Image 1 (cartoon, rainbow, N blue to C red):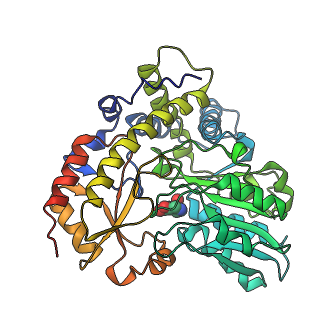
Image 2: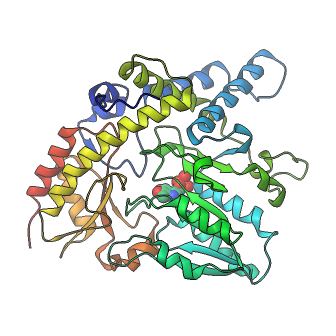
Image 3: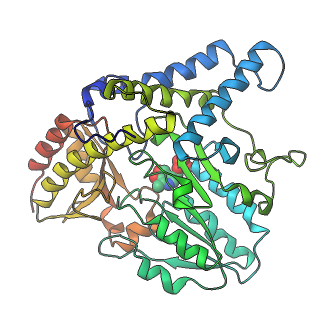
Length: 413
Ligand SMILES: Cc1ncc(COP(=O)(O)O)c(C=O)c1O
């Protein structure tokens, strides 16, 4: 695989694919939902204008619809290094996890234990915690209240012969630090426990590999990864027999058993637009063709990471220069964090600080981002949570300059 370090992301070329970027704002709320390349918009429109029929029949439009849905799933399979037969494309990650938790429930017994974190988005926490109603004991793996980070040392004492599942984020939507999922997978195996990982905040920045990580369940949201509003869930094939079907009683074949309501058709077809975009980037940056789509994903995401680390480093340096600002998580973009940066300003609510940035046409987020347990543990609930500036690969130095200029104008205590 070509990993030449002399190749850097051509950000202007990337930006040219995103029509939304022309609105005059520095868009830094990518962790809430990324922009989509024109190819995704086009694929959605083409499915709706050319087909819009039920798949799985023998007439021509239906045959084509079936093929386009399968092609969309194949793109996600390649992205995760999974097989399409191990994937559910559902309406959202929250819904996918809810269905999974219900499906796993009947294989659990009262007294069995599930480990959840207080670092997760509630999607990967609440659905598991609810199983307490059925006698399942919930153990909480707590983040460091100063940094928001998880440590393996705090996980170890929670594991026991009753542990059946660990649910954790690959990367928190607030802290940004990448958690050592492979190490947790080893710990889970030693105790015979399953591992369910939320990759929503990781997947836009680094290429997941469910096989290398050795996870049992892995989910992410395509609408935060340059795609339409759907969620994908990987399920290790050997586990299907342990999961009670959640779809109609007569639907017996997985993964459809874990996909009540089926996949959103036009958006599943539109997933191919993500591959179109990656292929355009790959053709632009590399002279030699890649062996397959996964290899293209791999080398383009390597470019994304290099660029994101550089511009996130500039933001972090700017934030570190202000003694009145507390940055959550790793204060350096040293390869171990996503460019999802959260901070709190002494004496100012998150909403007031965000309003200041809006006045400078910087779009960012503020609040708890549905990770209320973490915000509470960090002691920031009374301040309205954090301000979150979250980058994607198409953010450029001008965006960072705009942010830093706004930061310089932010009143000091
Ligand atoms: C880390 C994380 N996990 C899960 C979710 C929920 O994803 P969805 O909106 O697809 O249900 C989000 C959404 O913000 C998130 O940031």
